[in-house]
Length: 255
Image 1 (cartoon, rainbow, N blue to C red):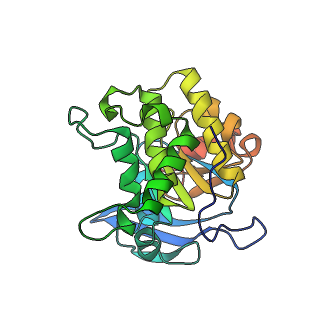
Image 2 (image 1 turned 90 degrees about the horizontal axis):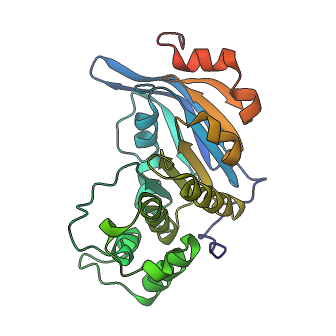
Image 3 (image 1 turned 30 degrees about the vertical axis):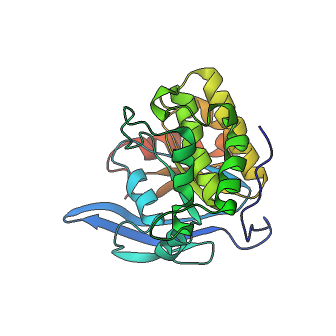
């Protein structure tokens, strides 16, 4: 793997936080998904987002992407609103399970090129800078030799790296990763952790949703425990204390 090329307007870690969320409330009808969530995350940082199913992790990521209406509160992504940041390609999302037909003959190169769509016209004709960005992203994640392989032919770990490459090609300053270690073996997990560390060291902000508490100290700079709002925050050693985990994994203990 090579060192990722910096996206435009990368931030120095001494500047304002790349992500600022203040008193965020989001509901789906009568169901309150987030209740006063506040969080700041700086650049050069990997923040693990930990919580049980239904704790609001997916809603939190969708809020950052500008994909759900906010009941109240505010989100600043690299100094911009969520929707503006997404349209400018400043936020990249790496899902746990990509909605791609693995039987369709879509190559790794094609998937990574999707990260450049927001820079193209309606006909989606790539330019040289788009192709250069894709080639760099493939090199970053170590998939150059597999660039023409169908995405469905990759292993689980390789597929995750291809989706990370899409965000790299996009030039995302904030990357949201949903369970990136789910369904991969230990070797692939180690490769992905090394890749995430490279991206953070180069200035990116990474929020990693995970259930795997044992892996967190291996990759995370800090941890935010989520139970519809932040109920614990700190270094892995500080945040993963028993009393904090009880707050995060016990229904109704977040109020």
